[in-house]
Length: 45
Image (cartoon, rainbow, N blue to C red):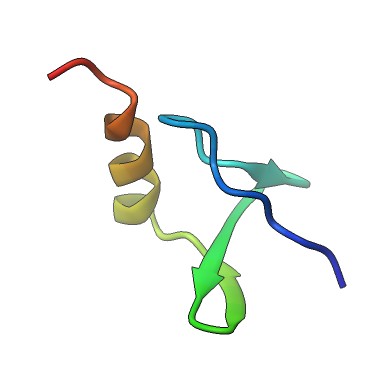
């Protein structure tokens, strides 16, 4: 088992080339929309 730290603002965290995120109490793969949402958080408004 491993832990996923919070993503740096605007940068989703990858492990072995895959992006993971929390899904309730479990971990799951981030889909493209979720990954893009995180990336947009780092862009100026």
